[in-house]
Image 1: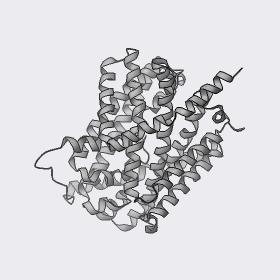
Image 2: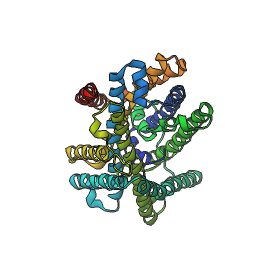
Image 3: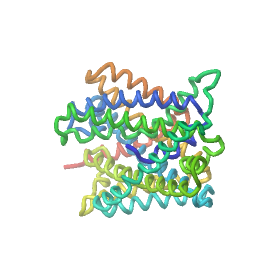
Image 4: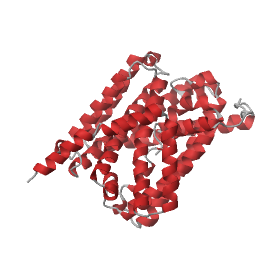
Length: 402
């Protein structure tokens, strides 16, 4: 779960101050509840994909809508990760901070990871191995520095506001903090391949989500509350923090490690953005054209189409600054993914599984959709509706099949 989400969030969360800390707490709690619901639902239907679970509860159209929106959320997530990589690289190459060049660099990252995945699972696996250990280095450095500066009294911590926390600030920040935890449902995907899934999947999901959330809470809040406000708004908050409390040299290395970590996360999500439409096409939920794979089993058409759509999103928003673009895309990706969580909670209620947790999880998901704002949440609904022609296309193909 530890990927790119944490590395640019301090810039987006800094304006919320202590409200963001409360936002993290609500996000971690809500994610744990939803993770438990998803784990139980997956154990009950280990042979079903997410869209199939929803379809069994509410019919094929509902299943398609959730599956389609999830695919779109993966594409938007990849855009956001690519922007995060470019933003951190811009601390070393300031020219990339120019909106047009930043978008071009992000598109280059998208196609680099697409090319690696098009080369097959082995190439993608090798790339993932090289980036897995590196991604932990920047987080470890910041954690150690936070311990040192807080222990020595060097940190200038933003004071707790006299007026207390604000509901609006907590709600808005919670939508951003959830971005960093997207994917907590992944441990539930392979229930049919796990030994003792009824025990293993909930434990793996809950422990992984709690540990990741705690690390993110400490690191993001530590940077946002101890770094001067102007410095949090750079393209590399981690690098700015290390430079401010240590030295410029190590800060440059941290920025490089962050970029590599982002590319590792992008590699994983690029794989997903090909596999999800492939599974939907094979289930008859998307046109059969997307079900084609090459000799290595790589869904080339789905990967290329997904990367083209991601590139078009970047082109359409190329005039925005990197931090603003990251924030907008993170909110949109979170909103789109939340419909999957809403679907899981409703399906759990439909099948009368872990009812209290499902009610709370549904309330949390809807509250976070509200916090994402009208533009992001409204756009996610429009993106869901945009899939209707593809659903009709797939239904027509099924009707014409012998």
